[in-house]
Amino acid sequence: MAYPSARVSPIYPIGDVAEDFQLPSSGHLVFLFSRSVRGVLNRLERRDGHGVRVFASHGLASVIAVLDADADVDTLLQELEDQLCAAEVWPLQEGTVVERNTIVRHWQNDGIATTEIEDIAATNLPYEVRTEVEQFNLNLKYFWARAEQFAPEYEDLAIWLHEAVSDAAKAVASYAQAHTDPASLADPQQHYGRVSLLVEINACLTMLNSQAMGVTPPLTEATYPIGEYSLLGIGSATRAVWRIYRHMSDVFADAQHLDRLHAMRDGAPFDSGVRPYRFQMSAWADSPLSIESQDPVGPATAPRRHIVYFSSRWGFHQTVQSVSVSWQCINGNAALDWNLLTLSHEFLHAHLRELLDELLLVGTRRS
Figure (cartoon, rainbow, N blue to C red):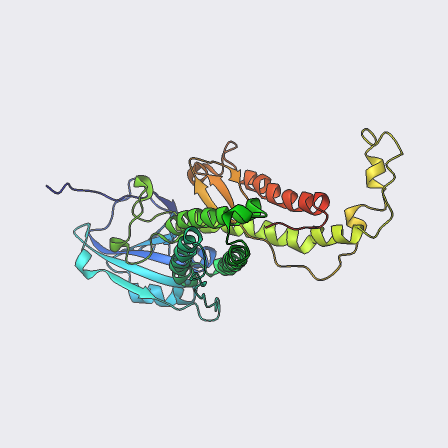
């Protein structure tokens, strides 16, 4: 016996929308997959109330326009064309959707993202590593095929993940060739550390695929497993936290803290005989070895990235490969308890780890 099911997602009115708003008996629901949410809203603002009502959602279809019968869909889409990745139009008849007449349109993000993702060779790897690399190849292909169209700002994450897994796979292959006898493993901790890296990246990338890219047009054929967001997903919310994270990552990369630490090695030793540093912070601030006083050795290196996703299990949490944001932030990020400022705290865990590695491991950087 088949049971009826419903898919739902919250939407939020923008502009002059009555509290008792009902869908028009005839007209269109237009789901807008935007390159720039602000750009779409700025243009729709001029039409708001003139046969068009505007709503926002958590999904990749971040803006939804409800058109009355006298509002022309083609004219609206032409006005917004340069701001859109795609649009899906649901005709309305007697206040219900006419599914068989659903229209999907795509626009190419020409020149925005041009990365070609190639499979990482896995044939010469041990079985448990080969399966992880093969799974990663599939995960990354799925992710980038959709991100290239709907969220090109993820391009540098795709590149970084590909390089990180490729380097780990090469190191594992080299290690396996040099240690064919399990009893002769010289450094199993480093070897299995790379294996765990692959496992974690796959797990987090699978989560990101679901949250960021799980609901693309046509919406009637997509699915998201979380009931309260099962129709539209949470793609735009996931894109938003990625952009916040990426901004912080870029700013700290430009500061070149790690390169400045390299420069400090050739400086005069810190006079630890002057006491008590523990209580006189000015002694640290006036030291010639303050990190701000050091010129970086070379140009800024590319930012080190993490996979950023929402989690109800981990909440705000950071690992070597990922940063999770509390699930409650999707609806409550303006509240004190679930403010996204905590994302900066989790990011700093990763940054501080790299600085401590540089200081305590004598310049040996660990990914």
